[in-house]
Image 1 (cartoon, protein in one colour):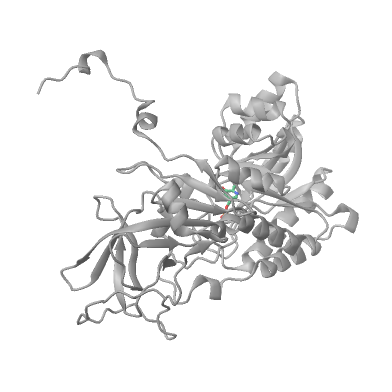
Image 2 (image 1 turned 90 degrees about the vertical axis):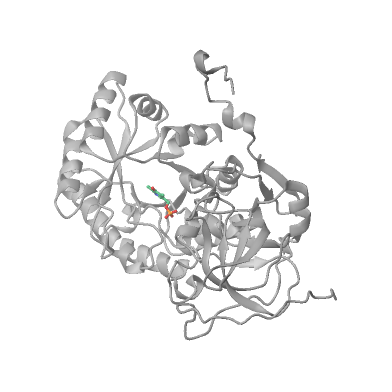
Amino acid sequence: MQKLKYESPVIQKMNAGLMNKFGTRTEYEPVTHIDGVSVNRMMADYGSPLFVISERTIRQTYQNTVRAFKTRYPKVQFAWSYKTNYINAVCKVFHQEGSWAEVVSGFEYQKAIGNGVPGNKIIFNGPEKTNEELTLAINNDSLIHIDHFEEMYQLIDLSEQLNKKPRVAIRVNMDTGIYPMWDRFGFNYENGQAWSALNKIVASGKLQLTGIHCHIGTFMLSTEAYAIAVRKLGDLAYNCKTQLNTVIQYLDLGGGLPSANTLRGAYLPGADTMPSVDEFAEAITNALMNIGFAAQELPLLILETGRALIDDAGYLLGSVLANKRLSDGRRATILDFGVNILFTSFWYEHKISPAQAFTHHTEDMVLYGPLCMNIDVVRQSVNLPLLNRGDKVVVHKVGAYNMTQWMQFIQMRPNVIMIDEKGNTHLIREAETLAYIEQVEKMPAHLQQINL
Ligand SMILES: *Cc1c(COP(=O)(O)O)cnc(C)c1O
């Protein structure tokens, strides 16, 4: 048993807005290991801060999610959403598990090709696709999801030039009872644009209409919204068959399933309130079965789940730089990572655990990052054991969107490692260096010299 530190007592001012009726949750155990690997060891070897990805958790989460859908519906295919985390090692775990790729830009498309994904298993989404990118996608027989009429005409032009019949789907947006509606992407269902786009595609004779797509939002907490989406896409698919003589091969429901993170300002922890993946699967597959297709005609169900498949597998390890008292008496703890690499702290109340033994003395505190910028707040208010300079912390469920939306602002991006299923650690993205950052800068000749 380690001797605990002496903590001097303080008189605490009450802060409103912290408690819910079940009381605040505090930490009882330090998190000293991830998948059996010592947190201290990893930080000694790879530095602080450090992103850690658990390969085992990715595979388990993926397999559980796939099982929830495949046990309920005969034809299911997942496509890994690259923008959620496109570190190649992460993508490869998903591809080894059988996931296709879903990309929203030409650069992500190239990454998927580089990772060995066959062209016909890449779904190309997004509002911006250049002629070069579309040409490549057409030649690779990829699934191109049309976002707007301009893109439809662009594809018709290209199909004539290349003398090919690209495989296309349209993205549809609709009212699923969730507001604000994501109606800026794709064609609207209610105002008839979606049906008109389908008509035009078939009438052109130049494009192969193979699917219908939607992505109704992210961190969706309503299973019914998905059921509504399926009914609306199903209605379009059914009309394609009966009125346009075109069989829709797949319905792509996009992503949007929540992870177990807690949204900022939520009354209860996310893990206690969000529907399970089985509940989502039940709502989606029931609605699919009820569209009216015969068993052998049921469309393939594609899912582009991002966040829900990777959030749990990511951790951020960091160190305490300092403590201070704010003018209102609150304790403030300053960490060596901030919103620069933990972008999701704008949306989530991330769970943070000390990585070493602590006293039972806790305090409400604000956690700041290291940036010289006022908005650099990791947790606005959290009840934690007291942390001291040099102490280590573990942030949970950070696998989604942080390693793509991170910014090289004031601090550079740190190492990312993966713990494989045997407990070995692998560096999968190296910490950035000044040379890396400056590699793409150019200095005009007249600015070469300075004289101070
Ligand atoms: C971002 C995105 C996804 C993944 O969304 P999650 O909410 O992370 O599941 C899937 N499809 C499209 C088109 C996207 O833009």
